Length: 315
Length: 268
Image (cartoon, rainbow over the protein chains, first blue to last red):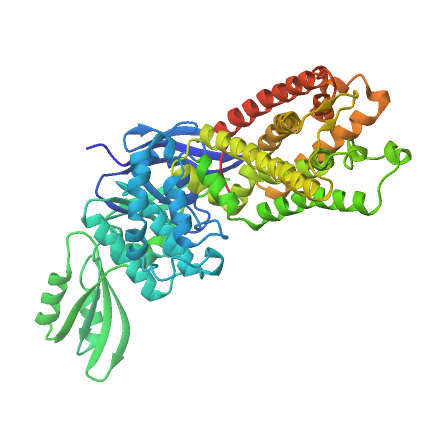
């Protein structure tokens, strides 16, 4: 199957500033791909180039197997939300969707009819059926966001490109949207979702790309980005004795982080060739009672801050 | 897209407000003439046909057209054509239309054709209002032409309709300039005002005798030439020139609008 999005050496420069800098990225079909990065990392610029709204300064991007060119992209099969949603405020939510459904109908009458028939369905999907006949002027930010997602779903897209879809939603709304996206992905829709919220991406995505300063600085499954369990927290009955034992072992670094009468907590970091099991055996030999061995996974947030701040920025 | 565009315009208050204001003009004219008939001495500054209104109510429609043309129609053109793309851009809906997708060329053409349709609608409103109020106050009599002959009511109606059609076609040049400006800015009101200013500046230049060398090339050249319909025989020369200028401006600026817009980065 052709990849949903392929970027090769994609760059967008505004004068001296490179908003996107030689980006290489592949989104496979069926994936729920999380596109992470702080504000200003170049996520939206990348999305705009992928959708043909702006032209790259350099490099190229394929969308659903077709090269995106000036005023050309296979958008019939794509649903998108780019930055905040926007509507004709003097029309109701339903009228907005109907007009968008009919727009461009000259080339695509059957598609236009199919989209019109889906208006109620997508309104229900995002929970806006009751407010559908109010003017958009009167909508809250969260309602506009939902309407924006409804618009993206209108054409039954193979690929959804959503830029910060949970913006302005309350926690329960965010959860609803996460579940909705997960369900769509499970039905086979490819979803490319950008976010600056790590927890959100970690909770729902199959694959994560991290962008900083216009470049992709990491890519992988949310778990793999979180790093291996190279640190272990150990609860023992005698922290001082445990630290002495550790000092005698090569490749183990211990750090006491708390001690009380009859109990203590230390963390251990391991070099290659030695692991928690070896340390545990040494403790047992020394007569130290081990209550718990807990792997400490570096959170995606730590990794993220690492990647984003550790990046050398040529300016 | 063209039909969506029209439907959207009909949902906006400003369309109806403009129509109401423009349709109100013949009413004011008719009322004023009835209350205080103008004398031939007044005719120097008066709009064309004003003196004839009392001879036949049909002239109320024509006077209405002549009054609406220099300012109200450019204003409407600014709102419909100048705001066309820039307004969508400012509201953010432009990117969602393009993502729908509406092809860029199609969008520009739909915006232009719907603007022209709306102008036609305003012209029809003016004529209808003029005929109604003219008929009520002065009655629809055969029209004496400027050359001394007389047009029957039916002939008169035909000529009035032709005048309206000419007026809309002559406005096309400015409308295309407006659409072109509209594709190059993200400010709807800015593009609308620029369009109106160009139309008015062009008319002012057309009235300055020392600028007669550029007169044939002004986009508003020949706007008033529809008067030729009310001469005997019909004086086509001014209208031919007006249509030519309008067509030239339309071709150039619509092409510029489309070619520029197709390559433009949509960042709004």
